[in-house]
Image (cartoon, rainbow over all chains, first blue to last red; front, top):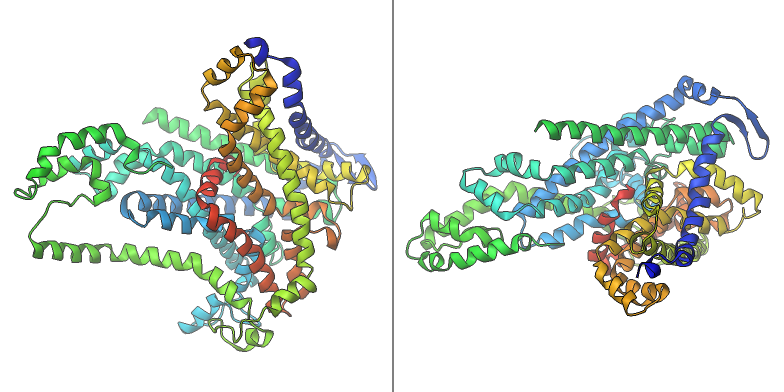
Length: 294
Length: 338
């Protein structure tokens, strides 16, 4: 039996191709990219060794720092909003809407599958101020307010990007969290109800602690996804106005492919990877401490 | 997806049995204690109020509950409008002429249902070429990802050998690393191999990027199959390839379909890889092409731009219409990717 399940030739034949592709396309480039961080130049002009200069440049580069700051701010705000709203929707699905729940879940989920580029361009038109008035500004005009040039300012652009991603992802996190809420044993809720807990009190003292694990994993998925934001921003603002909505991903792309700076581009990618790892570790550690305390 | 009442099937069945007599008493003595003890299993499904009350008070309760829930209902309706309206507006707008865009308010309906914008988008905008490129790249890479990923998942989960957990961990690491880490070396490799200017770079990159999640998910699905199934088959004399092909594969057929859907959406909606490795107009995929579409027409031609967006959005929407349950299940299961 173990001779069959441990057949070396079969392991090699069945695992080999997948492992080969993965190694060539992912693993080797990852380490290669780390190697690029200590060089300057690109594939056409050749490379010169510069040591840690790229990292020093990164910390002295105002654009890089503002891109880092944008990435962090965007990731934290969007994570809080999308997991928060997703959780509220999930509570709604579980405790309030019963008959139409399945249909409403399906409708709220569908923006997730839409192509980001299409949605980005659509939101551009929704928030357009000139030459035609989009629905959002049209509604403002209807209320008597003047049109707002949403993409003309850093702050309003930022919030339109957040709004778009919230629109896309809310239903997704609602389903993810709903799966966790449904698993809470009915008897537990019922006994809490008999003890007089209801509404928010029930949610706070019973539902929230019990859905903490699934909330935690949602937070990690969310922060890891939002730190890598690219499509939405390219399609909606392309980093503008100026570079006020440029995340690290887009800055890396521009540095590498518009300016051909492979070394510096790899450094930015490396910093992004480190950021992703740090944030995930941070969430893990902070929750572990909470769990031992409570 | 388990339903609310299904998650606690054993205890609730017991409670319905126990509450048999209590339910019979309910109409004559509508006290709160009987309703709460009987309602254990069905309270969620029926809203916990199946004790019959005098007609008038029931109606007033209904009215009160309606108004009590009114704010919540309004919120739900507003959210539904916020989700659906943009798509509706997009589709309606795609039939408008340039003059209508500039002179009519946004809520006006198109004057005629002509497909001129769509024709322009396909003929002058090259939308057909973009869609064809996407199809040519996404489906072959999808097929390769599924075949290789399933075989690897099988080896990593069903077969017995040293070091398999390390290899699995190695695959998992690939899910977390941002794609920006692999773009530059790959660009160099493809350039050196003279693959730049073809669709091959997209094909290879998609396979590599899709692999970790597929292997990881496939391993999870194989783990759910009882080991006895495979062990019994080996005792019956099946060799390992028959074991994979005739026993393992049929058992994960549904999972394969689910992962296929997840990967399809990831690849079809990808922009980063497509932008990086397509350097000429007739190599662009639908996403990269659409992005350039607006650049091409800018603010000048609204109609074809809206038609282009509508084609890309409605395409995925139709798939979702038919397969929404599998898609929801698959995408949430594959959320590790973020």
